[in-house]
Figure 1 (cartoon, one colour):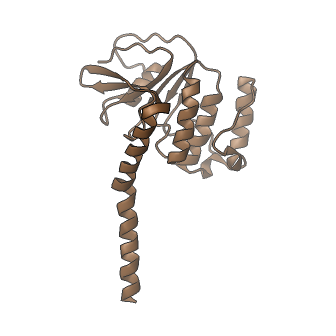
Figure 2 (cartoon, rainbow, N blue to C red):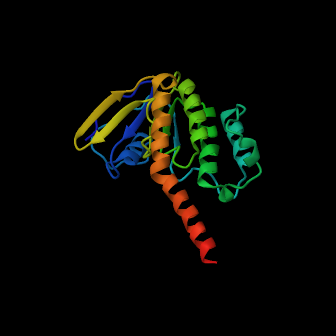
Length: 212
């Protein structure tokens, strides 16, 4: 069961795997009709799916040109996207694909942005840039997004999906104490996930050298 009212701003949908976060976005976007109850959406929606919305055989530049024609506006690039313009979508890494899609999302004219795992493959630096942009965009639009990483959530209203319960936590402003929390959480993530792998690689390399 889910009952909630979204206003302008950024909302992070949190919850354990399989609780229905992506299903909720599909319902809000009108793509999933298999539910009871009612959904009232006031405004046009831009839906960015976790697996992407782009055509694999088109280049990034071609996507941007089509976007500019449809939206009748020029795209303002961010995160050094120029280097990807002549690359076909099928050759993009997941992180590059997310950068391209977020550039489109932030430039669209739709009033509602639904973003499913938009930062899962982005670097820490690019995540910070995206959050800075979302801070500006959320003043005029409604942004609803999901994520699994636990080091980036302090700039949005957190909506927790639990069994038959919805909790809300209004977090502090990202530009103040939240930035410190985010960086600290990222360091914990790094030392728990990445650092041990690098130590293991160096250790294996040393063993290999001594065994030669």
